Image (tube, rainbow, N blue to C red; front, side, top):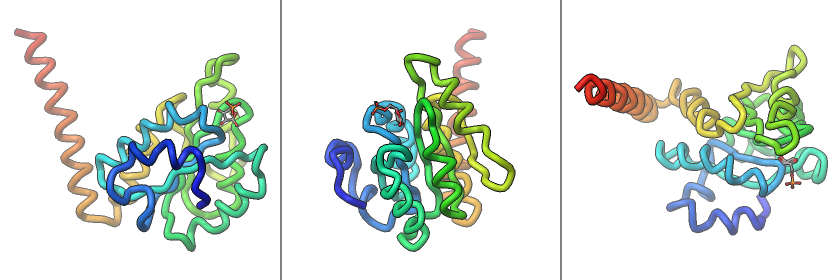
Length: 181
Ligand code: RP5
């Protein structure tokens, strides 16, 4: 993956070797304007200590780059792709058409149609070419889904997912107790 402006922007935010060593997940987005949304996925993968790479790939502005990214992802060790895009959001679907790897789509909220355009562009895939689509702007859930898929074959990661769910439950129960007095 070419060192892009986005990679440079993320340098300070990624810790250790998350962004460069044996990435298992690829996070791509159509534009650097998607980054504020996609940061939600970066945070989750960092918290679960899942190595990832992140870059910009645009279906419309850089179609050749999209092709080379998608067709080389498996041989580079990528197991899951998270793709964020807004508007005519063809990136997740086109990537899913170019590789058998699981693709999770993140619809980016837009100013004109509030992200409904992105959601419908990503979710309405033809039979045979699946994209797992999360809610508008919910990049965190895309990463959590990626972590769960990886955890099915990774005992350590499985334990971390179980702890995450337990922590979530405890948080809600503590809030309920506080509310009840
Ligand atoms: C899409 O167009 C991107 O995913 C982004 O959400 C949207 C707008 O991109 P910019 O014009 O901000 O670069 O391809």
